[in-house]
Figure 1 (cartoon, helix red, strand yellow):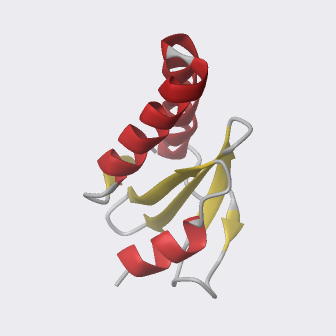
Figure 2 (cartoon, one colour):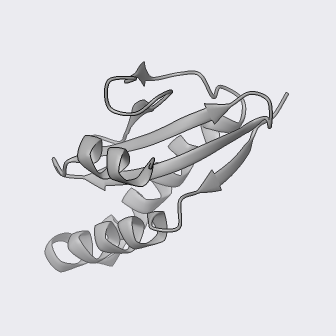
Length: 105
């Protein structure tokens, strides 16, 4: 069974900020490659939504997985709706836990 992927409205801003940051220091090829890595990691949640570390102490049902070497994807799984809601995507040590907690309210 495949789960549908949904995004918190601010995830687009997360991804844009990551791309801009990488563009500034490593150029367009690196930014394109990193975005593709992140998108590929998110796509895996369609078939394996329950992977990653469960972090209930941050927000109920919150999970986190790495994407590439420096990104973190934070999400929750709704089995009844068969969907994954991506709360945040962070990069380079940004505080994914605080961002996810604030967005889960």
